[in-house]
Image (tube, rainbow, N blue to C red; front, side, top):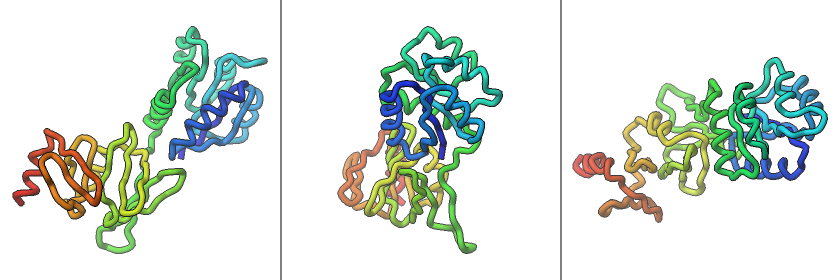
Length: 234
């Protein structure tokens, strides 16, 4: 979980950032700060992973505040003023986004924070015996979900995230589909499209360029057809 704070003198800016971040399962708001002094006091007593920082604030500008920190957290500048971008990047900010910004633009900035984290492991395999475990944990919706591979139907790429479709629910995970392709190596899963990995034993039928799992229709990518043909001829 990536912990963050918002530093901005405009309440509306806090509302927008919070609303967007609440849609991301791997970030958690720790504090709303409405001026730099409030943020400084909080950072003296707490540790966070990153912060959203406005530039134009009363008493102490955002960038001047950033200069006072000896070991600042990763910083995403949020401002209406593009002319300070160079100064911001000279202070090693992670990203510089202009207001008003979209959800996609904020996600791109947060992903840069994630990429800079030395440890990004979301899934931890669990084993209570010498046998290979069929369960693992996925962080999503600010919870750790224990997944049984027997319940996993298929995985769909979702930008820098993935959707895990189970028998009775869907979970969004903060891992790319390539991560799951690497760990699901037991021969029970097959990547059939740049956006899909399927559980082989859950396939109802294959028709043309489509796979049916329960009521889900999954496309077979042109470059993955040979893999599916090998499955059919095995």
